[in-house]
Length: 532
Image (tube, rainbow, N blue to C red; front, side, top):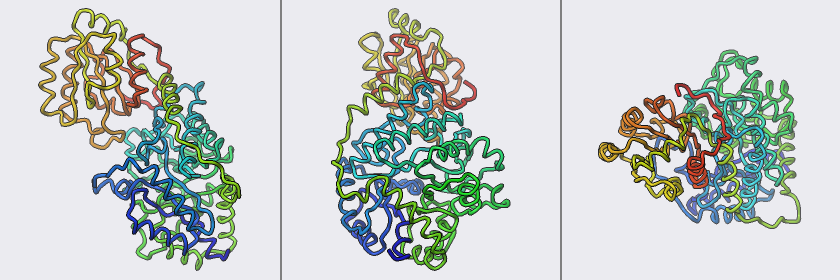
């Protein structure tokens, strides 16, 4: 290859599964002309994270999985050098692709006892198999971020928790599972995105810690990953002034973070990939097209993820970089391509999606991660109330046909009530309907995993909960992010409180059986929740 062709290998532009034919052909042209190294797949242009503020409606397509497979075949046919196909699938292909297996968020896995860490390995393995079935080689996951800031708007549920040793162990188990089936992984977001309160898709978070503090906590999982020869590390769009002579320079563009700290001090010689270069924290910095790509490469990144200016970026790097530095990054990319067999003549038969194994695994995780936070003989309380006709079930944000209630119904005689979205008109009516019952089983299905707008829990719902928590015996099963708990008024008045983390059917069924049979809960909260 010429130097220019080798530079093309550093570029991983974004492609969209549900895109127009015109856009698909433009990508094919990019592959043919510029010898790019790989692609990073997203569901659609509207679903890309930096489009949060547009609030454009995502159009779902049940045929996305087949479209993804077809596009990968089509794009590979255009490539002189086989493309490394990547995707961000932290909790499975379902993060980007409809009708594919979904696995629990990292925060749910973080609730597992250390003795069950093999389940995290199994998640990594199954996600790897799902990716391979589509023709993908590289998962931009998992997070090695330690979630030690409850106000973090973008990490939260995506982290294994706030215990650095558990985060490190579980991240490595996840990676080990993927590697076992020949899929590359990636620890992110170096040097640690957990203790931030800004979404780097939209602005620049700042880490105030000095190097000693970072080495003690944030960097710990990355150091453990380096010791285990992790395939790649992603640099986060976050500023660390202590490492940049006080300047708020994004780590992605900082030689002192990438070259000095990660390469030299921590001795990492694997693949370094930038976070998406379309993110607002860096994408607006340079007027000249290609300048951002050059600055990211010059800082020490080997792969430029979601690069939007491929031809211009190639020329800037060709003009400014030394042949030695180009060769170093090129060799790292080739090594990763060799590892996943991209240059092998024999093709490996494609696997199929295995929904049955995914469901079985989700059941095992549910049984081991459910966390009992408060127990005043929950099971006895609800059984006694059912016998006396004083028990009612209240579902919030799902209909009464949810799996949790369906599993309870054969054993508990109690009427079911539900509040769905737009609760203002129904909450008062529901409260009146509950007047004759002194004990409630409440299933709160949290609408959103991210904390924006109180996780989309409406004021009318919070007001209802405030009233019933203090006037009735309430056993609350919370299906969702545990960071919701401090938002719930009068939560100390609850009779019982059980944290479920996910609303999957497997989790709902397991939660109901736990309540009916008073089964001990194995999980522990992976984050510190105040005021409960």
